[in-house]
Length: 338
Image 1: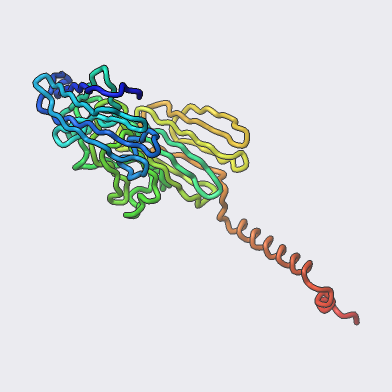
Image 2: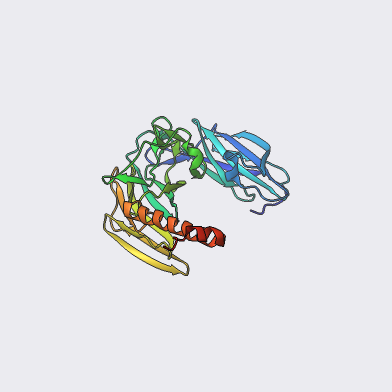
């Protein structure tokens, strides 16, 4: 965002009560941060929580909101490759921080009360599947919907993040992730709030869920293919208002994907690849698994197939030996005439 070279930034802090009413919040701590990019390039604010290079904190200014909930901070000259963000610290939470500060208009940051009641939470589930020769790569995005005018704080209780996993008797095999399994799971939070951990063999989110529908958690990982027919399933502890599955594979592999619930499907031909989008016709209740049947996967474990493979390799080896052996050795192998 382009900003004038200098001048103060006006911040308005608003308190939202349990009934949804709003009023100015005096005495709140307002923090202005100047972030510096690498080689004069604008920094990515999401990199702050990931330990990435190319972003560093150049300056931090602190002010307290007055009786009208107002605060003024002046970062001075903001040069190329710099970004100024504003946040409010209140009741153990950080509000804002992902907002870019601009001059000439006030920034409004809303502060919410908190609760541990998760009854107001719902979600959307998006599952991306890519089938290759060895794995089914799952890309799961969980979008929170918090209809309450309060923060739902699951820092103490934790919230299990749903994953598409191998299924047994229609149920996802949960609780088997190793303690260090998060190293093999790419995870992303948008915006960056709370923390993600492996607890009791599952991926767990601990932190705040703000009102609205703009908070997401994304997991990407690989599920090994063990059989030519394999069931996978996903289950969320929250009611899913919408569930979408977007599957992609090459025409050479061409598996078959069939959900166990009513759905509408759309297909797209992308040349070498084929893409299928499946949308469930109804909502998915909480703690209800969505089971997907995957068939014609590029793997076979039958005894007949293994015997045929071993026999083919043996014949190929004998044929190669015959081609490479010298003529004298072949004469010795011929039967003698009587």
